[in-house]
Image (cartoon, rainbow, N blue to C red):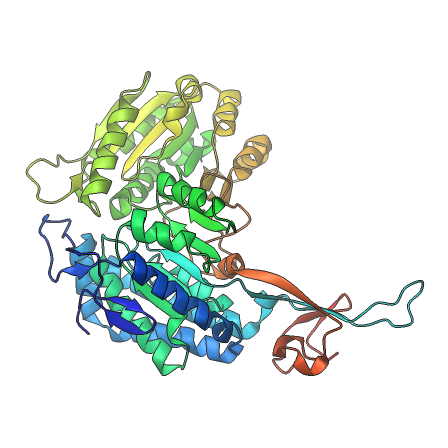
Length: 530
């Protein structure tokens, strides 16, 4: 397959009507061929109308049909081969191993959702059979299941050209729910986006899904993105990106005549708490692993450990010195685009200029390097200054971290309680040490979506038990995850059929249970027939 620069609407590749632009290689700053076209407002309306026209058929597709479609998407993406890998590398500056790993994760995620669809647990079928003789009032037959919410808009993320983009977790979980998807591709990797969209379009045709099941639209977030979110036919939005971008979408969605949910993942500091005994035993080892996590992917992960907290001690001093020594040897890395580079440099400058903040180490100089490079940075601050200054809880998206030194446990607890919602929280502990810090651990657990022990948060496993979300502002709704099979619940809504003709029941509700799925029947979980 080759990149055409076109957009996909209702199964057809067409030229966008709002001008063209070019992708940029962030490692060199050079523009890439070919020119890519942007959708007009009329084309957005056309795509949304196609999604709405396809919604009923796709929602009513059988579980096996939907699973086959998801698997076909994975197969077609893999069939793109090196063409996809090479384009993603030049558009993002990410190495081949990272792109290949992300491709494997993307396809594995699609296949995992196919298995989830076939299992049928996400439908949460509940049946309370009629009790005509019940006194004082009879009960009618009642049957409950989750069904697709309707067309979903997905915004591709800058930092994951595959796993959080066109065929990423938001798209895969929406497809699993039975929702048509309209992707607003990210301008940092538009050629990559088109190639993946070509693969999904092939899967749509091969599995007989309606043409409007999937569309790809490119263009400005303020124009194309806003038009998609405010389209009456759209019923939900998935977004991974900045706090400002996420809040802008939430505002648009809430101001609609019919407000809709916007499931955002908006970044995080991902605090790491160092308990005293763990530092006494392993300060240098923890420091080395921390720097590796901080600088992984040039720090451009939403789970990047950007905040460290510990109690003042010789062991904490040893950790700071070791971290600084490891960090100064780190090379300047290529960031995803010029905007992210500028925001990172501005963020580091702002945080480092705050009262009480000291720069302790900076990585290799970025001078004379082509493209959009940055230097890893370590800063320190006292807990009293940190607690007094809310600005210090702002994320620096990139390989920068702020280390907070606390006088005692009480000050450490206060610092943790001053944090807003986070995607992750990490505790480094010696064996048996955590039992003495139950209040601290409870405070941290109330502020995160994932609590880790003796590790670092970069690396999010795609599985049934994963939670990638957290209290606001890490995400817009802490009840949901954007990674793992539970992500499907964002794009479902329950419906109850009361006294409905049995011959018209959808398969999951039929007495005979033809799908063989688990159901709650009169309070008992079973796979047996009614």
